[in-house]
Length: 261
Image 1 (cartoon, one colour):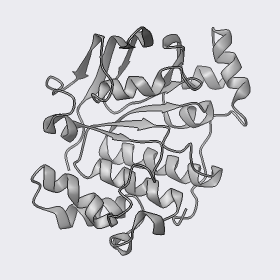
Image 2 (tube, one colour):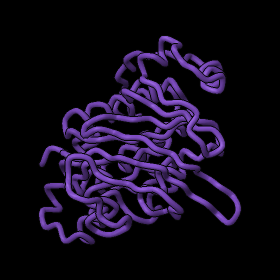
Image 3 (cartoon, one colour):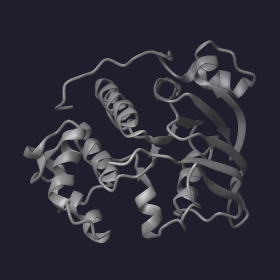
Image 4 (cartoon, helix red, strand yellow):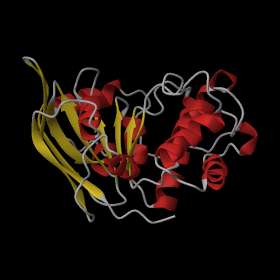
């Protein structure tokens, strides 16, 4: 598999629905191989930023460019999907309930005309810690943590360079959250991936990301490194209020858990 060589540069991104401004002139830059977090309470616009990057939300203004690679393909096209993949918040809602894991993983390969599907499916399952025994199970036969692992495997199977992570652990129990975070951290290091991760939980973001951006009502409030955030070196009162609301806020290493989570 090829090492990633692309970061992402977002400049003055705006998303407008009628008269409602969901995102107002947001800018951030993620270097190749880095992990960047976007945090804020519900309605802050953080998920809309990810949706605008991948073409699921209308971009009213701004530019989105690759760093260290060729020009960014048009969002929604096949070349774009080979480069950028998204992992959604709800691992059950994002998986077809009537398709087996094998079919779920095979579908993107068939769409893109990838021939070595058997090898890729087995490798993807091994990488997320499940193994080939899960190939013919249905989503309802899996735990929440297992479903999210399948969603991650599906995102990785086309070997993208950039992953957009929309609250990937928010619907999971705390112990399973740690397992999935450790998995994502290991996958990023192994595949040299670039992450853009959205969360309302500062502890989750500071565990996985080197830097982050705080959003409120569609606007960027503050950009700060995870180290400064963990040391409470922040400038804005809204960021401080998020820190206080984040129960157990700390930067540390999550302990690996059992695979069956």
